[in-house]
Length: 62
Image (cartoon, rainbow, N blue to C red):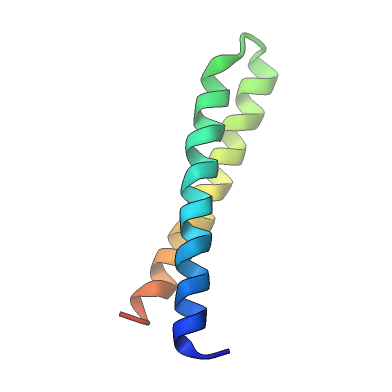
């Protein structure tokens, strides 16, 4: 895979992660069940880590 393909794939993945973060954050506030809210908040945090890793890697290609 060339650098352009890798960069494009990482950019697309970053967009997906950002969408997942928004969804999980929204879900964490949408339910009255504290356990479900905590679970979705945790999912959002995990995706934030993934997004940060992608951003750091993308800096190498710019």
